[in-house]
Image (cartoon, rainbow, N blue to C red; front, side, top):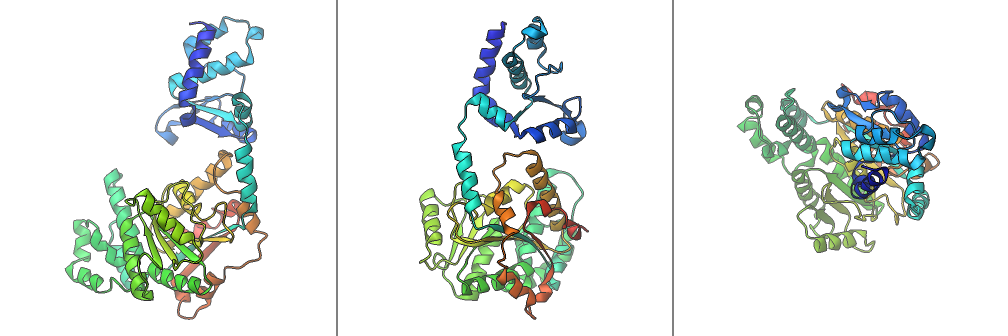
Length: 424
């Protein structure tokens, strides 16, 4: 195979596959990433459970890890006769043939691909104009009945995927409201504690939000937001908690589903979904709360009518959480967006959130061209606007006991620092 043939094949395959496997880094973090992986240029087995070849397009060094046939062909030339493009094509060809990772600085990508980055600059400019984003981890104390059910959930150390998912599903549902345990498949050990008598008791308090610290927080929080005329967006990765909260809101506030409170789930058709979005964003509508599944609110959905975002449960993937927050914190938003990550004290939600936040922090440091909001969080440090809603709740004599701790993180760089209090 000639050098020209190698170049042609590499270019053809790159056109098809580049978007799926390219890793974009700025120049400084590209160097750091290379040093982190070491001279071998392979991600250690203990990290990914496999050996993954990593190639760097910015480097003009032929390391010997490239495709052997292509390397042999190119090495026939004197080093002085090898062009920069030939060395880069060798790396691209090797990357595609071995299904490895290709690291490339964004500046080099723009130069090679001839990309005009006007859209990125426009998004950055628009992000700088947003009022700001404030995040808060709200650690809550479960009441006795809820704590009893939570402590009855058997936290398995069996690493089978099915068992892990089932346990996390049960804990997530019960942390929203203990009566939701009736939607869970219990183990024999759990059934001995969560018996028929307890299930009957839970059924009686199903519509009582005070039996769960998260639903109690939610009802009081929404009541205050209604007074100051701010709309609330509530996210959960599961449908059952949202359905129950809908009943709580209808019962508690005497609201009507489809008017004051809206519900967006994955089974809605696009036309129905857009109608809900328009209704929620309309400042003249009756809509005050939108309950939404994280799966239903995909990228591109605009929910700037909300300035308060509540995340009921903790997800492993920080990108899912960022995408949910970005439904409200996006171009067109006129207010500071306040987000609240609800965590039940004494449950695995705390450690889970710590791990999620650490992954998010590492992602921000290494992958400089992420889609996450950047300038908005920095601007919060300059903002003097206080969270009057949360402040009122914390200082209220009858509500203050529900709070164990608050971690306000106006700057992403400050995350992870205060998470030790969430760990057991």
